[in-house]
Amino acid sequence: MPSFSEHDLVYEDGDKTLHYLTAGPEDGELMVFMHGWPGIGKTWHNQLTDFSKRGFKVVAPDMPGYGGSTARKVASDYAQEQVIKAMLTLLKHLGRNQAIWVAHDWGCGTLWTLARTHPEVFKAACGMTVPYGVLELGLDEALKYVNRDIYPEDQYPWGQWSYQAYYEQEFEKATAWFDKDPRGFLKAGFTKGNPKGVGKPGPLSRTVEDGGWMGGAEKPIPASMIPDEYVTIDKETLDELVAAMEKTGFWPGNAWYMNHKANRAFNLENQKNNAHLKFPVLFIEAGYDTVCDTVSSTLAEPQKELCEDLTFVSIAAGHFVPVEKPQEVNSAIAEWLESKVSGKKSLL
Image (cartoon, rainbow, N blue to C red; front, side):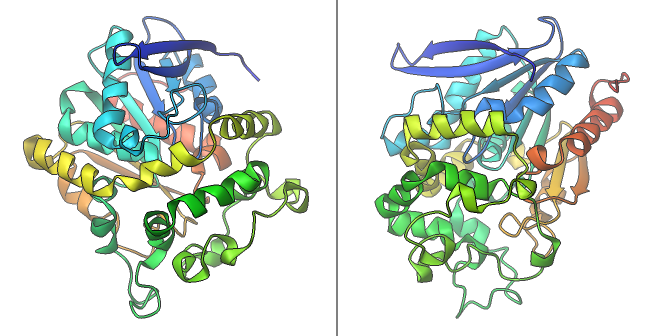
């Protein structure tokens, strides 16, 4: 696996550190990759390798609460108002005014908050699995787009988002469950998407009623019980991610889910251009994602009105699409960059 340069950025008067990876020419166009839950900058290694070879300056932070970055047990540290401060500090530290920002999962919470409130720092934005205009406005906003044909309200009051309600109700219990076996959980999480789940209630839709993940199981499935052929993440990256989550515990990462109301208020009070995005936006749908489901629900509808230059790509994969289908993801981004952003051929 290629090596990346590792750096620590100290900010907030020395109280916080942001760890990040970087590669590519110093004068290359800047791409910043923001991972989701759970992750580290290294989970983007396929994209970092590819786009650095294409001549881009690529940067992937361990997002606040993860890996080598500050991971205090302070829930407000993970409100998007605070997280975007880290990203804006990183951009300034890199000596740039704008970037092509790329994100997945909760990284999109940061991406879309940044886009809403600081559009001036964008040359373009690429979000994967989480579309613009919903989740950065909180859980209550996401509930508006649940497909009630699949999730009748009397049976699935939170739709596919039951696990997020569970965090709010049983945060310490939920967090302790992941910490019992990080490797088992992470290996299970990074398995291939299953097309048979599309259009059916997702596996996290009864988390509150079950009293936890995996049907309320006492602990995650042991890694030894998960066949390697079903796993999409390479062993080296999995080992690094496991070590990172064992170091911080799941508390900081899970605390990203504890700031829905604060995130909504910050976005609505500070949005620019009436929340419309004028720069190029690429949304990559994971066709087999049963949680961030944009196939069977209307979750992706708001961005069609709010993004003035939207490109939509669907890839047949599960939730962790940049890990499961890196070549398809990279090709989609490269073609979009060529046609909408850089104006030059970016393909290898």
